[in-house]
Image 1 (cartoon, rainbow, N blue to C red):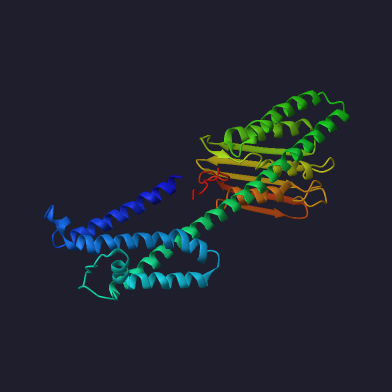
Image 2 (tube, rainbow, N blue to C red):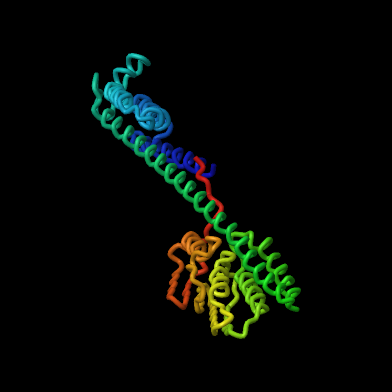
Length: 354
């Protein structure tokens, strides 16, 4: 609605400026009230401005959207020709219908006014151009809205897939502890409840404070440590300059989940290295682990994992992230850089007011 009001105000100012300019150009300019006795004022300016005003908005509001916009080009061409003739023979029309003798700017033409014919072409062109640009902008706005909604739907779909995936993997960990009658089972359940509070409250937002997301990652790592194995060698280094930076929730956890799921063996040494550095608006994340299971790491049994995260990065941080995944027969390495600050997606759409 604000854009609509602004458009109206701009048009009114243009018409007012045009009218004032025409008065200034009169020979009697500055001689009040003589200026209103000038024959040019009543027999040139007033009739011309009324004609121009009416034809402009006739073309802008009626002909272009209802004829040209609906592919009725033949009727539009005929209408334009008739309007051109109206301008061309305006002195005759003015005299015949209203009894007003048109004074004219360049003499007093009796039948044809070539100057007004030229003005008619200009008015038709300007009104056509303005309406066409306006329709194009509206179409672009609609396309952006449709693209936004498609992206938002996809993001939310990807996000809803992550939560059950995380819960399933975590419950597997607790189940393994319970089979061993481990004293850590109750501790694991307590950590899970803490993590679920984050998942069900803060993580519902499109973006969360970076500090909370890192706390969630640390909780997950501590939970995995309870499922101890002598063969696992865990190296975790997290250095963060906590600012007001925000990050999409659950963006890093799939890489960590896959490392613990596919990179741990009960028979071989299982080194897992996690490095997370945040300085100002730059996040650097690295994950290195061996690979013991034959399934592709990026496509787990649940069909989510890395493919899901890769797509979220593309949608949330376009041109603001670098992801490099190096997968070999017996190792898996992830290098991710994200510029946290910038235009965040998704934003609430700003609907174009037409």
